[in-house]
Length: 347
Image: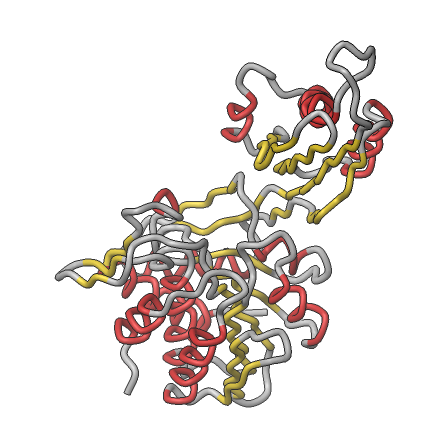
């Protein structure tokens, strides 16, 4: 029989950078079957497990099984599981899976999905889920919130690529070069979102303000390209921002690589209430937070207006770091919280 820690360590042991998730998806599906799910891999490569427990609401629990590249390998100590993905987001994924399997008091249909490519601009796994599965009655997204906290919302994201081509010319020719156009586009973007050009990263501390990151800049006088990522607050006008950059830097080509709006739910949301009550029952003081990053909650909420929140054990400050690890006691509390929340969820 699969134990929660067995599932977690088996997932973390398998390297699964984005676009290379097949082995870990097959592993998760195998564990799902041993836990009683009807499980398969869908056309996108997601691991999908279903528990049909009679008439009642349908709840989707979706985490992601891809990671950023590299990072520490699996190492298990007396009190923690170390390794890439232990926090982001194989810990939450294992907690959703095991919590759903243990929620035998839930009446309805539980669908658990280990989604691919969350760490990419396209979020292809979650996109496939929302495009192919029936709309559920409620959703829990698995991301590290800390075992006693619930995430109510995330900033959105706008990913841009800027490219410029200019004819060869003497350095004294009176027009901008390609690499200068790419730099100009970055400066214009910062101006349009109201960021401090001397410290653009400072806006990442605020949920209410847009914040931009220059993720790529390369080129020379004849050809250059840049990639920029904007974290957007609720109500941000993506179309106006893109149009302004194109208008102010007409000699460059500005392409939208991906865009998803911000999302936020209220504390009174039924999923938030169920998770908070379960945290309290496990001896915790439930907290609520919003994140300045983006998750598959953004992708799903863009189409499905249903009760929804994000939950998962793990300290998100350890995401993508060389010290990524999850405490085993926090992980097991997370499993118990998911079990209790599902059992008590009233829709």
